[in-house]
Amino acid sequence: MAETPASQDVEAPDGPQAQTSLSTSTARNLAHTTKSVPQMQGISSRWLLRILPWVQVSGGTYRVNRRLLCAVADGRVDCEVADGQVQVIPAELTEIPLLREVSDGALLKRLAGRFEQQEVEAGATLAKEGQKADGLVVIAHGRADLLGAAAYEGETSHGTLSDGDYLGEDALVDKNSRWAYTVRAMTPCTLMVLPRRAFKEIADRSPELRAHVEEFVSRPEPPVNRRGEADIGVASGHEGEPTLHGAFVDYDPAPREYSLSVAQTVLRVHTRVADLYNEPMDQVEQQLRLTVEALRERQEHELINNREFGLLHNADFKQRIPTRGGPPTPDDMDELLSMRRKTKFFLAHRRTIAAFARECTRAGISEPGVDFHGHHVFGWRGVPFLPCNKIPVSPSLTSSIIALRTGEEDEGVIGLHQTGIPDEYEPSLSVRFMGIDEKAVISYLVSAYYSVAVLLPSALGVLENVEIGHYGSEDGLRARPATSTAAQA
Image 1 (spheres, rainbow, N blue to C red):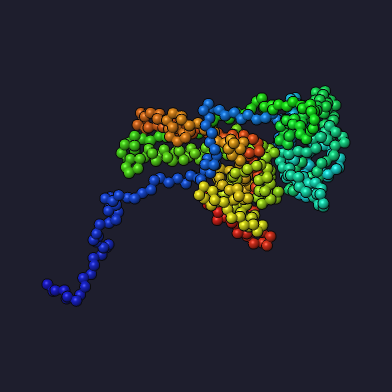
Image 2: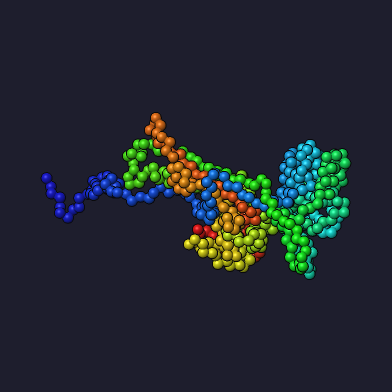
């Protein structure tokens, strides 16, 4: 048998190389893997839950006592679209002071049927200051600006009208009524107009409406302050011994009561998982932790969006203003800020904060931001802008900005909860053992109790219809959004 020369290499056998050491996949069976606790993308900053002063509600109900309001009505008249035509909802006509106490549904329906639909373009003048008013005008859709003569020259703005606002109600009963302001359409508007002659025709045929109008016109207006509360007679600047008029402060006979709401779920964990797989992390504890996070997220969502007590649905109509041009400008924010004393916070979606930052950049304004609870956040006039992803963004990319004054001492917005409940896991949140079923599954009832109360209407304001998808600039270049602080917190 011939020997292989020493200088000749031995060829490797076909196929993969033979393993010469322990593989990493096998070694992991003996290693203690370093791992994280379960992560959850749905956890947000939840600033609203942190900034609200929480008040203990021992009886489950919180009553907000206020002074008696003498204002008859201050709502909006809603419209609907049926068969391609805009119609005034008859019951909504009671939001107009003149028709507040009319209860005849058939009469309201006849009045609603006499409204005439008109379409106007942006820039059109809907009313001219000083000219004779000839009917009630309801803005079904669009925005209009109230303009008056300035002290020196030009015009000055007295506010903005939007969907549901109305003007000219005095013209229905006073043939000499005149427009107090010039009203100019800022966007294309759909108007619903009730001519004075049409209202008079229905009033002449309806003894109830005629008697109601006569009583309303002859009713003396009680002295009220600028907030609509009954004025308290106070004398000042007098000399000698004049007779002082008596005064008292009347209260609202039917104050609003807030009952605690609840968010609940049933957490289920198999006993086999709880018994055998609890090292190094307690499975029940981790399941409970993530469940509580989901409940707190739902809690903040309800505080913003619930129709009974949510902030967006419970803001007073006089505290709601639309933007003047769509995107949130510094002028819009200044107007929102000026509507209340001691505004503590702004709440907005992150995209809305970025939109406002773009408008500041476009206007050449550099806002340094605000240090708040250890975070550097975007701010305006020293008031922090706090992100809240629970404020909805519509498909047309519009959203809202909420302004808050908080605390019982400042007659602001407060959170409501009840601590000390049975099986309490966190303040006003309980975890109650429900037993083990025949499938060996453990059940826990997890409940969170909460609500939010607005002590005075001026404590809560909303900037509505904020466009957040506007990126254009005057020079045709895309402005760089100042989001370095807006995206934090």
